[in-house]
Length: 425
Ligand code: HEM
Image 1: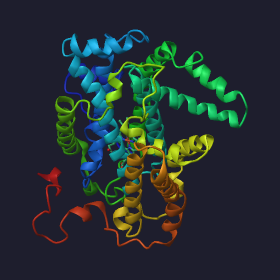
Image 2: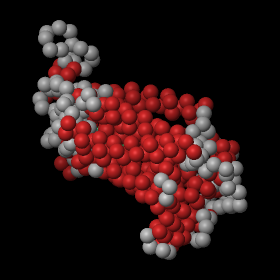
Image 3: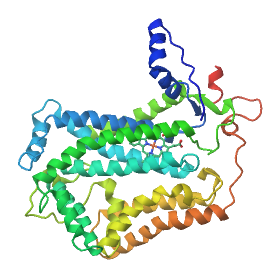
Image 4: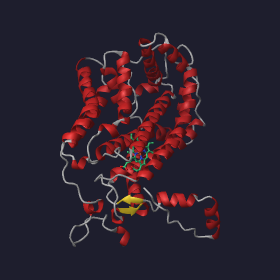
């Protein structure tokens, strides 16, 4: 989206600087007067919320790392010491551990928002794929972070998930074992594994930050999608990002922070597992090894398939399939708002993912496995069958003439809502 910054340096120093490094001009163009669709709803505040989450995780993580000891002998006790002895350490730890869950709540809303409004469709394919890569890196980061307190679930979670790579032995004998031992840095999960997980857990958020910059860059090339899925055609379809979108983002972030604070101060362990307050013991396996809640749908898919290798392939394919969504969706219309049939299938996908999340926490036996298989089948069918076929046979409902026509009054009359022509006031 071609857009020139209206930045004007206010002082002679600002002018001098602008001629040498126009960073203020760039920021002003991208985050102050950038044209934003005038009809964005609160689901569009989650990108900003996610940026906040990433920065909060990095800041709290760096301070935690100043007190944490990445060794098998000291890790568990050092986390306890942070909670009990370090000034405000309890809060830092809660902010970081709860923050990980909040980050995933926000990213799931952000992804489903994209799926509902067709934000992955041209010209936003690269933006979407960068999002999928972000999601993968987020999962790797969270997985390694969960190992660090060196509780029972940390230890056994790492053991189960790293062991999945041994299924590659079914393709080339010996390769799976070699990879697993290489990941472990030994013949079992140990302090060596913990130490390398710590190093990577510190590194990956910065990699994530770099990919997020590309993600936002790609967004600012294509411009934002919006609930109608229509492109910005005239000036009246858009408002400047500041103050309109920024103020809305601030309201969304504030509401999100209330939920965040509620968990941090009143339910800090609600989203975790009690077993992780028992120090890691390689000789005692917990009765149910379950990952954190945000991995449960993928864990259910893994266990739904009877073969180990098949389960691993299905689990990774569940993420990989997202890369192809821009091409699997054949609909002419972006937003599900105007797709009477697709809407239903979208909610079926949401229900399937929630059901898989529930089933992932249950033992892999009896009816739980059967239901996991049914929902796994729907998950893949949604992307591989429903999206391509429905796009061809569905008749979309009438689209509004433009973004502004969808929110501004058609006749004279009073403006409908606060979105009406705010820039003229
Ligand atoms: C650290 C994680 C992430 C951050 C910080 C982030 C940041 C942002 C921001 C600031 C926006 C613009 C505001 C908005 O539309 O909400 C955005 C838009 C978008 N993001 Fe993300 N994002 C993240 C993860 C993801 C993931 C995992 C996906 C998909 C798999 C994704 C897909 C998209 C798409 C398609 C848009 C364009 C939305 C539209 O214009 O309708 N993002 N993101």
